[in-house]
Image (cartoon, rainbow, N blue to C red; front, side, top):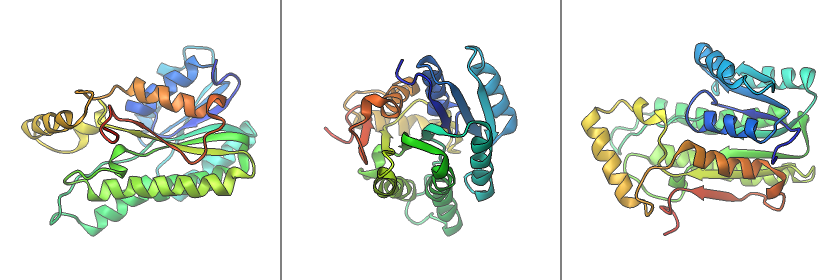
Amino acid sequence: MQLDGKVALITGATTGIGRATADAFLDQGVKTLIITGQDEARLLAARDALSTRNIPVIALRWRADHPEDSEAIAARVKDEFGRLDVVFLNAGVTWPAPLGQIEAAAAQAQFMVNVTGPLLLVQALSPVLSNGASVVMNTSCLDVLGQPGMAVYAATKAALRSVARTLSVELGERGIRVNTVAPGPTETPIYGKLGFPDDVLTEMTKDVVGKVPAGRFGQPSEIAAAVTFLASDGSSYMRGAEMPVDGGWSTL
């Protein structure tokens, strides 16, 4: 198994890519899985659903815009497990806004959730990361593409990509690898949270699919497979790399 005996943490693991990755990590033999979410009811429901393999699943609340949550998680990991071997920084938000409708407060909040929060969590966890640990960050194919209405979101993901490069150098002396996975359009609940009418979402979907060489949206399990590889020792010669899983949108 790719993750046999490892202690792993996934942020935003209640739905979508995070939840699919939690299933994949359990299938690949993690020793302990720690999942986070913002909504306690959904978090506990996810924990209960995942706790079917005789592998401990720990549910901890983490809000990216609450730095104290990061410190609390780091303290809990240190006290109970002593180390972390894998971290998947998956949690993030998408708040589209075309030029002319971008609000400063919303832009700052999006940077806090997508960039500053994950960075502060890695900072808090760094003392408990085992030598040779793997940190995987969830960016987006839009960090290299131009898509109308996505200026702020794309900028946050490009910033997170830059963070991964810097942390790869800062943590590299301990053999800790930091890489990113860059999903393309993926069938997750996030699209239903954009606040658009159904007809607008339908047109948006048609437009996006028309740009993707694969001709479809990806499945969360397909992203999870890439994350699992980056989390495993099989990617031991990768540092600061970004793995696109976007149906060829950013490369063809």
